[in-house]
Image 1 (cartoon, rainbow, N blue to C red):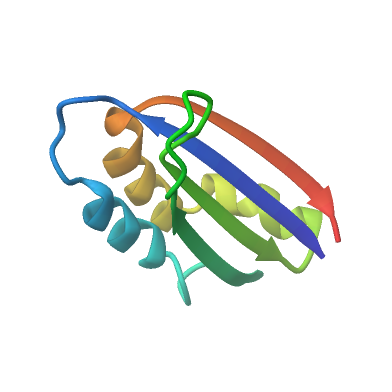
Image 2 (cartoon, one colour):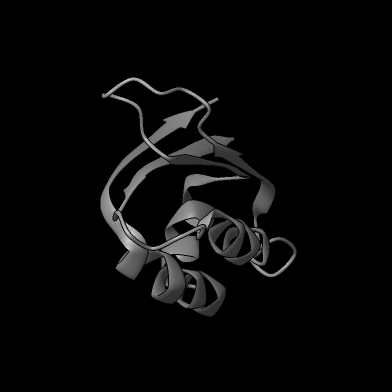
Length: 95
């Protein structure tokens, strides 16, 4: 199994966009083959090094993760999330 983790620092001045982002990310569930689990977390920490949001997805294989990046449902999500993100970080690892 492959775990895909994304952390976002969001652009300031967009109001309360976290519910919009959460809905967009959760909409991928059941639409992408090999996507086993989606977890979204909104940060409660206040340190200057804290990010705003985390996404954790589990995939059944590296091939499923690769296909996810090209899947139309993921492209729909990115069209919503990318313009709101100031920075993001990704890590993929085997579980």
